[in-house]
Length: 339
Image (cartoon, rainbow, N blue to C red; front, side):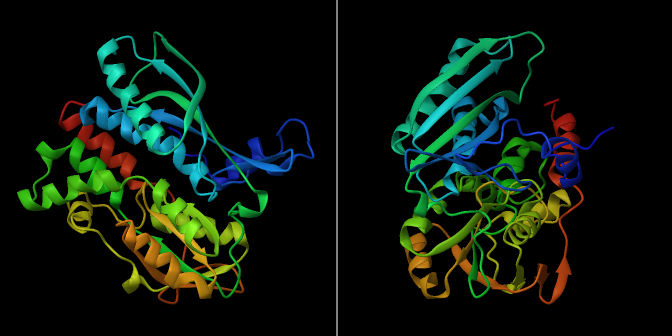
């Protein structure tokens, strides 16, 4: 059986990277493994593009599932620092999804897009045999702005400081505990804290707040492979060394207990909503203050140095071979009847 989740660098380098269609001069940033978005320059403007699959998990409730889906769709463009502006959405719906259930998902898309100033401009919606939850389509987000204001994924520079929002394992608590609450043997208060992490599972406002506040040089969200994987990808993109102080990394309420219950290393698990940033040293205080003003927990956790790789407390760390969330999801989905 092939591994689930995103393809690895070897697959990308063998099958995808050598075959990218026409070589056009207007592509300012093309596909790279572990990089969240691409950039095309049109008429002196930067057009940031990012595509993601759409996931709808009925057990969350269709409104909550819609909230999560639209924020995932917008997040990769948002880490460019340019506010998302346009969205194209394709739904390939399971035949059993009712009109009312789709309506709840779409209302969440409309509400969140409206609040963020995003216009939904095109797409495709249909029911097809063979389609099933949770993967029900895909979306492409555009963000249009000044090319000089794009926060490039390879922009980390020696001397910058390393920041993180929210810390690791957010998705383990907010997503897995919500889904499998009846099987989670933790105190009620801890379960309640963990379930609240669901609303932290978006890096969109984190990225836009930070980029507007100070000299941010690179950003990357910690999805598959978690915080550890995101650190490695950020270091590889910039060709730099990252030194991390693990004691400085925050952990939100309910996360440690949830990860311990599921037997998950919080640093290795997908953590939608967690954002890594590198910031020029003189801008750290302004970025942290802006995030705090928006109620977004954040901390300075290390430094960017000359060299390569990621070192946590002086020990080199590598990207996880796989994301433990997949195995846990499969195990508990069967236990609570969510296959």
